[in-house]
Image 1 (tube, rainbow over the protein chains, first blue to last red):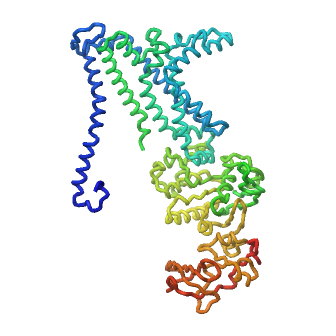
Image 2: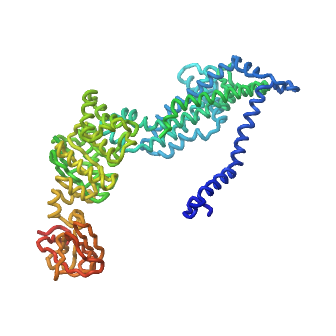
Image 3: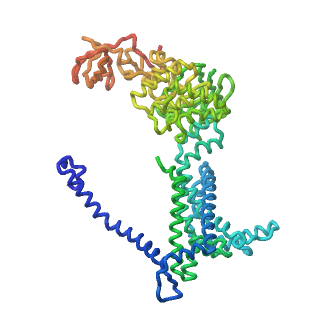
Length: 305
Length: 333
């Protein structure tokens, strides 16, 4: 009688049993639901509460309630506007490079070739390097204007070495982050590509489609759902890029490579202004939700059916 | 026009020779069926003709001109795949239009051909649907529609009915035969189902391990199987193959007799005990044991028989319908 649903003799008390098991199920899952709720609501509540206080660690004492003053201060900060733009450019730039690059690399890896297994592992490997390490490797070994590989390359062909991180800080960070996320996009797109029915490609071949047409009309539509997944997952992580900025440019020069996450860090742990940082955190939550709504509107329909 | 000639065509995958040298001519307008057990190379042969696989040696000629190195799209052949291979993200209309779009056919001409194909295949109401919203039989018709609009020299069918249920399969079989009567275009049809082969073909090509065992009209193969393999493969229920003393009496290693050529009589040549009796109404199939000839002798008699499991029967074969085969399995005159 442990499973009333499968017991043919339980017809009489069927409703009772279902109700029983339903309420039992609710009681059973309640602890984890409550824990998760607290896990989410307590930090959120505290952030909102702090954002309404004048609360600076450098000025101990009373933390008076000041309403939306922190928000006004944060939103009118010239650095804020720069940070918003930098965040969006960073996300859009990395998405573009990883999706386009990921499709191209996946197309290459899908071809039969010698040493396929090894090449695939090599392609995936950047994903295993932690962000701090990979950013440091890029900063010191590649982009350094004196000792970097690129500097040597530039000198070798007779050009002035280019100081990537101070001349084009945001573009450099986009490059580094793209390098990290390209394997992820490639992996997802490659598996999607391999799930394409080969008879469809053959049918298109018989129908007279050129290799480019086959890609455009058959492969790309087949990939649309995987591309959606890549964009959604990456956006979540790219909105909160921090380590790469922290170890390379520290948001500079000026605010040229400061994104929202880094600006909040500056408020809270450089200026010790907990109140303004909390206000920034709430703004970031709102921004992430706006982006999420737009994304779901634009591409979420690909996930249906 | 659509005459297809294979001259000494071979195909190897690495060291494995799938198709040993093979010659075959398919005449213009013919309905030719490749039939054989799975793994006999019939689909490979079709793919070689389509150009989806390259031949290892020999030549494929379409209407007399060598097409061995011509890419698939330029051979003027249309193929219907086992999985239908419809493009899932396109509507039925776009699926059917795709080959014409690739060939740069004008929009008016495209619409005209789509309308006429849709009318012929009963698809007019479904043109705006996606393949995922169609039943198996409808998908099959879309795949055929996509082939028709190209106005090909020949149609190639790769086991097109194997994904359909039995009732639908009989219906589609008739539709394809009907289509062939109307279009009079060459069709090459691959199947492992000998009933499909018998009912549809003008010419049957029986394949085993890449070798052609026999080529001929359905009745030709039925009446004069060239060897034991064809004798056993064509016809349902299978021909009874008998070895030993009974065969020796006919100066043969093996004799074959079809179930319908054995009669249940009062005092026949052979005696046995009825095992399973399948009563189909129009016919009765008797599986007769303990005849001393072979494990189970199948007998087909018309109408209803009052015989039950375990009954003893006496059988007499029709001597003029006995097929004789020699030690190497070949038919003896």
